[in-house]
Image (cartoon, rainbow, N blue to C red; front, side, top):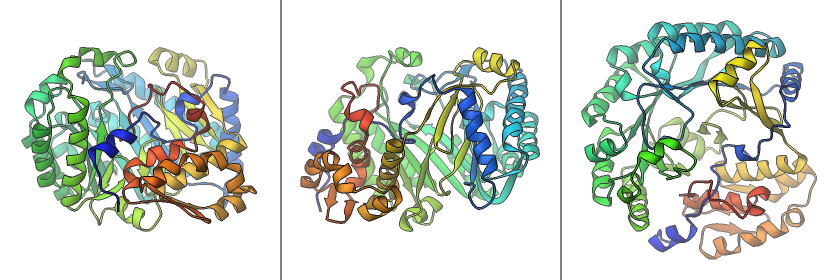
Length: 460
């Protein structure tokens, strides 16, 4: 098997999409209107029964009390908690607009609260939100119900409260345990605080605990990040999301507060990635794909072994291929063969709802070619392999003819031992899993036609 080397990481660590969708969100157009979205909702309602896909809900809570300089999320920094009260009213009205076209009581097997900081909401507000969702949707037992948690906003009592509300999965934003790095990104949270919260969450019985890490932050060094990795292995969360920091101050205003001189050199960043891969796998974590690791008995690792991984706008998922209803400012959803995104600013989002309109401002109705390529890319991203025959039968094409150019692009990756091409299909090798975004890019018609890929993060 090809050995992981710095040269290999450097060679293939190029900008590229994360493929939480295909086509990716940068391809959405304003020509996709609310009327198009309503048509997709109505079609779903008409397909109730055996033809209806499972339903997933995403709720975006944009508020944060303080600014993290690395952040590229859609958020609103505020010291006024009362702003959440008005926002919940708009969320309630947005759900009512959905129910007009979907009907009441559609079964939901997956719910995720993201942000921003969902735990910005007070306990009573979280109760209001969950009761509203349960009135309008059927939250089925045994589903995945997760919430992103800023460790600075919760204690043991609050974690128990989240469990009582029905959440069974937590994701803690850690990023780095080094005090100097935390100061440089304006996010101070002692390691002891996180260790205590994770211990309490385990006592309470949460099914899965995820921790987010970022490498490439200001003031980080290979030595400092090695210490953070040692602490993470001691903490031993069920899942780890390891992201590369992409410094794009022209796009994300908060990043302008980061001094470029404080960022690690490219060689050090690659070293941090290499040591992360080695440390986590040596500690027994399964590399699920891209930037996700999980303990062998976690549902995500089990789903990978069994070939049941799926991918949505929140990343890898164990749930079947879902329609996703996205609620809140800037939220992105998927219904049928369409993608849609809500207004990105609070003023526009509220204004559209005040007019009695769903707040969708752009999206995409997928073409047949989009759907074929999505099937290929998601098979590679989730299962790491595909059989030509399965695509041929599903889409009535000849894979080798349809994708002649794309197969040619994989020749270099095959020579490096990252993929195996045969007469019957494509298989991503164990080493190739680290570069699976690059493999998928070979089939992305939009990226291949686009000379400017700097808007994307690096694929490793």
